[in-house]
Length: 359
Image 1 (tube, helix red, strand yellow):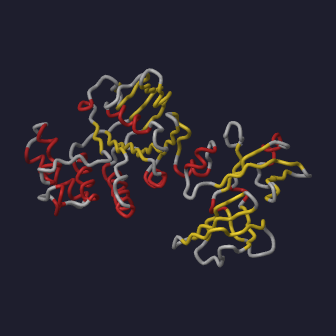
Image 2 (spheres, rainbow, N blue to C red):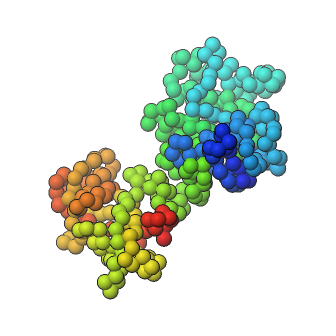
Image 3 (cartoon, rainbow, N blue to C red):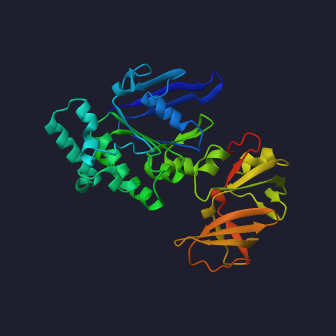
């Protein structure tokens, strides 16, 4: 096992396209870190540089106490699990898992022990004589995981390994990967564009955009304290509601956007005084909007009702403003109904419309 450190790492393609810029992270021995962001943000490029599949334009990558920039991938003591399983179709499961060990001329008894141990961890003992064509997608990905486990690497790298699976299988294998980390205690770096995967798997998550780190921290910290509008909107499903309006001062701060007007009483008054007379972005998460059981509240109309089973998503409208609220499944509302809504103001966020930074 090993620490992984990236210092001022930059990757430039075609002399002018920055895929990754000034990337700095320190991943502790045994830590599970997730790189997350939209397609094209540079997260897979970071993983490929760690693996040695892409050259570093600038900066240094350390695995343990050794700079690995110029070390061949096979000598970095890492194992990589890809989106596609890359199994040999003519080999059975046992041979697919053991193939790399045989190339390294590991003793046959040791190979058998490692393969059986990996198969037990992944619950695929009964599949050892099957060929890949006789396996489901989830079983194939388990075999790919087994092939990595038997190498006993210092670092596991995962490049969107679950994206080819259906929703049910993704949840199952997500749990298996978490169990795998708890059992092996090996450093793991996981890349995904799925923020649900990031939040549930990572001890630390790193959110990227356009090759630059936007924020890093625990899932709870990133969710509760986003540094900017991009992070606030990317993390969370449904995403945070945003409305641009103006801050007015009528013996206390007032947010005003057409018919949507309410006093700002979330503890952010001092920070927002300098925005009086200016535009500001108000952000509120769907779970922090509730239906009032009294006359008090902001009047809105239920445009769309999405029943999710364990909760309801309400699409609420007032003039040109639309919000999504997440409410309990027993909430008695109908499409077209007028309701009064309440914001949980202490959980609200405010963003500078120019810099997009949270105030």
